Image 1: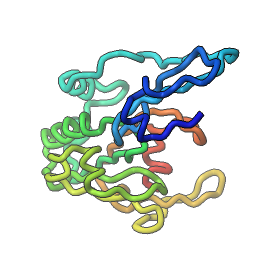
Image 2 (image 1 turned 60 degrees about the horizontal axis):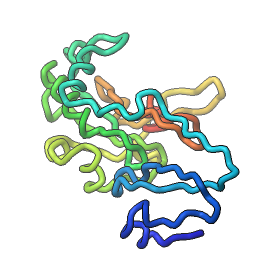
Image 3 (image 1 turned 180 degrees about the vertical axis):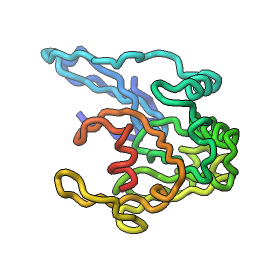
Length: 214
């Protein structure tokens, strides 16, 4: 059974009629940066359906103070302010709107720590880390970084086809070309969410660099 998007948006999840004979439904969040909508998935009565929730599901979002405290006491590494001491330039990567990472909540705190370490505001810039995805427009970057950071700092779209530097060859004999701005920065920071990917395992982590800015 198909229901038009217009009817769905007008009436919400409850407006969707159940599939004939269906006795079970699952509500999932969708459209992270385009409305934070909920969709209802209907399944036939004779299907075995079980929702597998991640550890921490339903936990309240961290407050600004809690995020700042955790950034100040990282696991297995010195604090960022200590690492940044003596550095001249810093790049902070961010993912695009296909990922729900709340960069706007984390990035300002990182900037504060970098400035406390002595970096000038003009020497801190942001770089979109999205591999071969399309470039982002300013209104989209505002959703990611927040209006204040976009106003105060330079930001750049990564281009997978130019502005790169050859950094060597992998064990599989693949050449690796890295974003020139990322490569040239004295300090490199990545922000990303660990999220399941239908094709490539999990996103986030080291993938913010490869393929993010390669």
